[in-house]
Amino acid sequence: MVSRGGWWWRWWCCWAWWLAGAGSGWGAVIPPPWVNHTLNPCAAESWQLLLWPRDSSCHRIFTQGPCGETQEFYFNVAAGEGQCRCPRGSLLHPDSRRCHSRFSRGPCLPREYIDRYGKDLRHGEGTCRPFDECPPGQVFWPPDGQCYQHHTRGPCLNGYLIYVNPNTGFPDCGCERTVMFSNYWALTGLCFELFQRGPCLDGTIFLYNATRGATQCGCSPSILTNYHQDSGSCYELGQRGPCRPGQLLAFSPDTLATRCTCRPDHALWSPNGACYLLYSRGPCSKGHFFIPATNGTGKCQLYPCSGTRRYHPSSDTCYRLGRRGPCPLGSLFIYDEDTPLRGTCGCMPELVGFWPKDGRCYEVGSRGPCPRRQVLDHDKTSAKAHCICDLRKGYIAWEDDSCHLLNTRGPCPAGQRLMVKQWRPLTPVCTSDPAVPLTLEQDTPGADSPSQFQMSNSVTAARGDDTFNVGDTNATLAPPTSTSLPGPAPAPASTPGTRSGRSMSAGGEARGLLDSTHFLLPEEDDESSTFYTGHPEGRRSLDPWWGTPVPPS
Image (cartoon, rainbow, N blue to C red):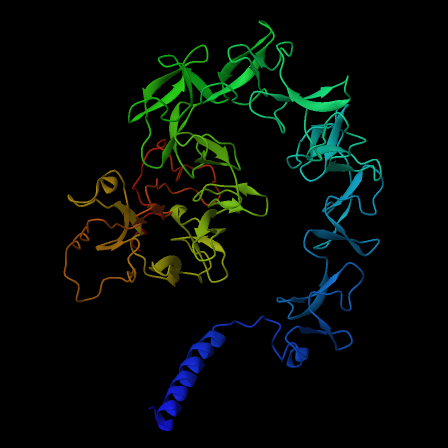
C-alpha cells in the first residue's frame, strides 16, 4: 500500500515536469511586434487590439477598423504604429479611395484595367491602364499582357476557356454553356478545346457533333490533321501521342498526314532514330555532348569547357558563368536550366551583380552602373551589389567615401601624399615620407599548391625593402624601423591551398578584385586606359601602378 507521502511526492514530480516542459514551450513563442505596450497601449487589454494614433482608439488588427471601406487595419513595423492599407493583391484607386483587385476593371472605363501605372503613384496605389491591341479573334489578358485566341485554354485552368464575359465586358476564364456550347462537356460541366484530348481516352479527341448538337469523344480517318495511320488512332497535335521520347506529333501539308518530328531544341540521332536534347550529353559517351549536324540531325563532339565555364553555341566559345562574356550590356552569362552544358545570357534579381535601380545585371569588378573611379562589388553581408573605389587603378576611399588616387595629394594637406596604412581593414593615411611608391609584385605559388593556383597571378604589395601580402589581416605599410636588418625582406611563405586575393570553398571560388588582374596606371582623367578586363585579352603589367619614385631633394 502506497502512503500519502508517496502520492504527494508523485504529484509534485508531475507538477514540476509539466511546469518545466510547458514553461519552456511558452518561452519559445515570439510575440508579434505590435504587442509592445509602449508603442501600442491597447495591447494591455488584448494582443489583437491596435492603437489608432489619430484619436487614440483601439481596434482589432486585420479588420476594417477605423479605415475606409475595402481597407484593413494593420501594424506598420517601420513606422511603429497602426495604419490602413489594401489587402494583399489589391490596389487603392486614388480617386475613389477604394481597393480593387489588381488587373480587374475596378472603376475604370471599358477596355481598361487597374494596375501600378504612372510615376506619381504612392506605394499600394493603382490607376487605370488601357488594353493592348490584339489581332482580330483574340483576347487581351491583363495579368500577363498577352493575347489569346477566343475559346482556348490560354492562361486558364484545365476545364476553363478564355472569353469576354458578356455581363462585364471584361476578359475572364470560365465555362458558360450558352456561350461555349460547342466546347461544353455535360458529364463534368467543364469546357475543352476541340481536336484536343480534353476529357477523352487515349487515342480519341474532343469533337463537336453538329447533327446531335453535342460534344463527343471520337476518331475518324477523315480527320486528316489528327489521324495517325500507323496506330489507327487520333491524337492532339504538338503532344507526344504515339511518338517516341523526344518527339511530337505534327501535320504535314505536303503529304496530308501526321508524322513524328523532333521537339524544339532536339535533333535526330540517326543510329537509333530517336531525338535528343541539343547541348546535353544525349546518346554520347562521357566527356562528349550532342550538337547540331545537318538536316535536323545531331552528332557527338568532345565537350570543350571545364570548371565553371559553359559553351556558347553562337560564338563556339566557352565563357565563365557570372561574367558578361558574349552578352549585351546589362546581362550576364548564366547557367541554362534546360540545357546544362550550354550557357545563356540573362538577368534576374538572384544574380550577383543585379542592380535594382535599373533592373540590369553587371559583372562584379567592372564599372557597370557605378560613377567614375568606382567599380561594382558584392557585399556578402547584405547580399547586394554596391559601388566601391577602384583599388586596381589606385583609387581608395577617404573618410567622406570620396575616391582619390594613391601617391597623390588627394584630400591631404600640402606637402603630404595619400598612402595605404593598413590593408584589412583598408585604411588610407596622409604621410610626407613615401620615399618609394607602393608597387604590385607577382606572388609565385608554392610547388605543392593546388593546380588552380598554378595558373593564377595573385599579387603582393611592396614598398622599398618591405613586402606585404595583399589580404594579410594586420599588414601595414609602415616604414622600416631602425632594428630592421639590411637587405631585402624574405618572400612571404606560400601556404598550400591559400593565397591572397581569393578564398576557396567546396562549392567553388569567390574571386576578389585584386585577383588575376592587369595593372596599368591610367592618367588622372583618362578612363580609356587598359586596366583590369577579367578576360584573356590584354597584356599583364607588374610595373609600378601608383606613381613613380619621388626624386631625392
